[in-house]
Length: 353
Image (cartoon, rainbow, N blue to C red; front, side):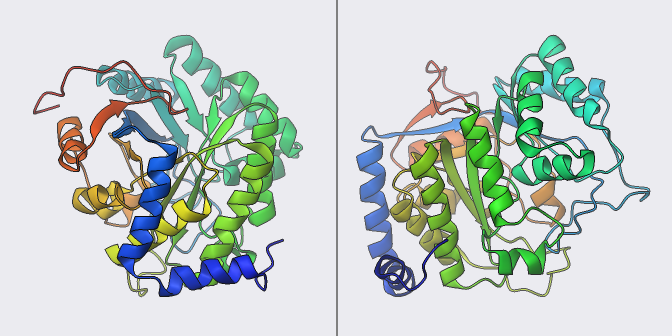
């Protein structure tokens, strides 16, 4: 447990609340250069495939899900998933992000079969099934969580994304997502995946009515796990997109809040190697500025994104536009894989790519 009365906690909280924006940015940027001394910024070409939108978690912040028996609910066929993968590969994609709702009507064998199908017919790195989904699988199918991870991994799962992290403080999670994995369960999936040799990412979605202290606790919980396992490849944060959700009356946080939070993450998470710039929610201009506030990665081309866009706020960009944003911020562009290993330098992207 995090001791909020400790001197270190209080010092982090005071820094977050009282330091100037530029002071935080300078501190975060210094750590970024220590970890990544080359003037390079990476990104990945992948596709976010939401295999189902049927969900019983009823998260207050989600506009994407549909309840069971809703006429707009869907489950993609294996063939539809395969078509999406081939479209991704045609653009140079090296990964899919496979996530969906908590659908109680899909048998566990379906997920295992889907990954076997992908590996046989459309081989690609599968970054899939958030910790919240893994906990749901364990509860729904009455399979111990470590066994769920093992079976998914053996069927073809390569790594686990950090979706569903929101704020890793139970008081907050109980209020906005009480049917979903709580803090220890969510982090427990991450640790188990690391024990089984898988790498994972980790996230924060803020602006849920949490306090600054809650955000600091969230970051410190991540740092504790990373100190034990070393299994996190990257941290990504973004603000709540309230439009169209049950939290639509909440005021959306601004770019300054994003940059302060990102910088604080770089300062606290000095043992997590990579920080992504969340240009998909913040836009390319703020995404560029984030590269001087601790971020060393520009995230994903995101050729398909359904969850954030369902709330009415998402930004699109071509490969060429992303690469111009990176070079315009003063960095060399590098494409990467999920584990942040770099690909051979590609030819400059075509203007219409």
